[in-house]
Structure formats: C-alpha cells, structure tokens
Image (cartoon, rainbow, N blue to C red; front, side, top):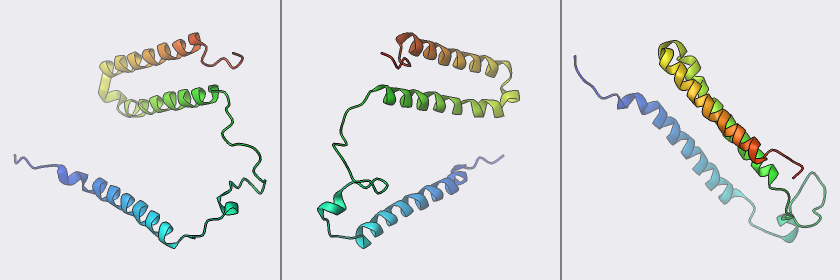
Length: 124
C-alpha cells in the first residue's frame, strides 16, 4: 500500500480561509478609499436612533454585567465540546462515556464554585 500525503485534503479549507481574508482586506481597502474624507464635529458624534447624545458614554456601571456575559460565553463554548462526543457516542464506548462524565463533573464543580463565590448574586 502506497503512503501518500493527505495535505491536499486541507486545500479547500486553505482556499476558503484565503478567500475570506481577501474579502476582508478588499472591503477594508475599498471603504477606506471610497469613503468620505471630510470630518466635522457633527459627523463624529455618536448617533443612536435619532436621539441626540447626552452625557458621557464612559459612565461606569456594575462589573456584574461583564461577569455574567463572560460566564455565559464560557459555559456556552463548553457545550460545543459535547457535539462531537454526541456524534461519536457509539464509537467511543464506555471510555468516551467516562470522559464525558469527567468533563461534566468539572463543569459542575466550576458552576458550584461560581455560585459559592456569589458571582451570580445581583444584590451585593
């Protein structure tokens, strides 16, 4: 049996990445070259649904919003790791089942730690 390189199988992925990068670069260059060049105070103001800007946009607010958002993204991304396991459930057998139990156990320990630290309490 002849051993051949399987790098050619990745060619569509490389091609797609190059097309995507080329589209981004081309779009950025065209918007820079064709876009308006005159900047005025009115054009540089923030525009929100026709309502004039009032006050400073840098007013501080609770870090809880950021914390909940980051925790959501963390646990949401971890759920993505379950899809390959579910697709290959039968091929992985008991070993794969124990690996998923370990993974889920670590996720539950992390969630319990977050709850114990009070990261989800809004009243504090």
